[in-house]
Image (cartoon, rainbow, N blue to C red; front, side):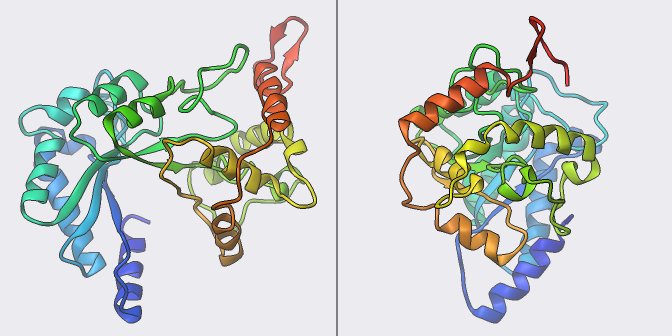
Length: 291
């Protein structure tokens, strides 16, 4: 919400008298590329003001790591290794914030990231937390790309690199934007409070619902599809936590109940593998359907 959520959280934290572990992100815009270190510091200082706090536990760079910066991006600009690590780069701003006591840990987000650059950053040992896109529709952060599966981004087993770097992993989009749910595959509309790009792109959303439908067998009387999706993620030992993005309290309660629920059965995983290899059932006439 462009800072609005931080404002709301700041009010709630003060009213309840609580101090949970807090992570916030910095998004470097194209017009800030000349002074990334300064942009990072200014963004976090604004976050602290909105949160009514002197420091946060983790600060992450939201921009996806890429081989080259994309200066033509209108927003959410992919940034390079040198943008992060070089003089005046994002890391310089992060480290200064840590020296000033305004954060404890550093990290970056990997949505739409180029895996090789993300792995290279992890290899420096300077980042303690990353966000990773990892779900049953695009599992490539945790498994080798299955033969036949088509994805927009191959994250090339990035979770193996996090384990080597001793970095924590907070999984984003565990339900693939709400498509990996019983409600979605039954034809239900997105929650009115659900935001993000899928709300603005209903055709993409419906296409992903079609993919999720091929995994409907994971839903049973004692377990919803959404719970199975989270259990799958928690099976990976590199995963620290799952950011479910609930839109209402009942969704949050269901996600919390996944903790300690145990892994999926081997027979479930074998069927999931078949779905991946069939590209969610989109093999047609000897070629992959382009849908």
